[in-house]
Length: 314
Image 1: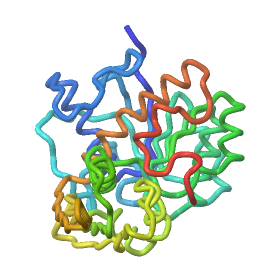
Image 2: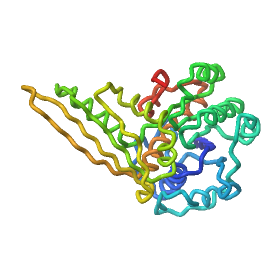
Image 3: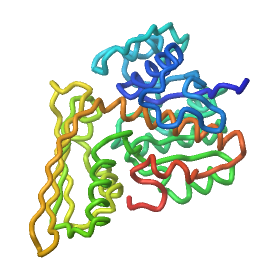
Image 4: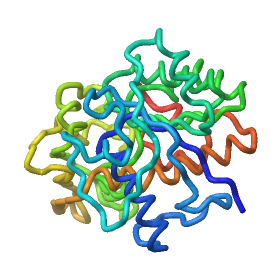
């Protein structure tokens, strides 16, 4: 029997709630609904154990992980599954780089550190990466903060035989994935793009944070689109009534044969944390497989799951 992947998570927000609940759901039901790759290098969706969790919220620290994921401001809905206690108390996350050693010690027994804290805190992201490196643990950066795009950091992980995956996951079926597919379709069918834009609205705390710290996220979205000046990304909007759902509006204006006009408007509505969990489940297994096989640095098979993989703009 294959050994389960031991994962530590940073951030006990909606994305972690979706992941933890989803793991329980798929183990109990055996369902394959919403699963992109049931098996990756012998690892199934249920072959993952969360062994440590870090957060900065005083209300969550010390609580069992399965309790903490339902505390406000989390608003991802309860899934239809039994959720036994994890036996994993939420640990105080690091405040600054001076606590790297403490976090590294708390990672004992973990194989993969999933960094799922809010974007816009690059120093914190790098400090957790340093803790993972010190502990001999693979690191996944799901945020738009540049970590895997740092050549020196990537070189250090590669030399140590530790996987470093990032930056900024591309949601399972999100705005960037859909927008990019539509832009490629225009090109493949011979239409000439005139202009295009996307608008994203959401109700999670991550959206609230990104409204206040939008720069790295906007750059990452443009990376995902390989965008020129004809494609614009509007600033993110936070609407609390949307809760864990995201609403996106896409517009494409183009010209076809004889310079006649073509116009397309699309509305997308998804649960944003589900889109993250649907990708994180693959990134975790890719990282674990690479670690177990001594392959450090970036894994090429993770590239399509990321908005800003190594080599893209910061």
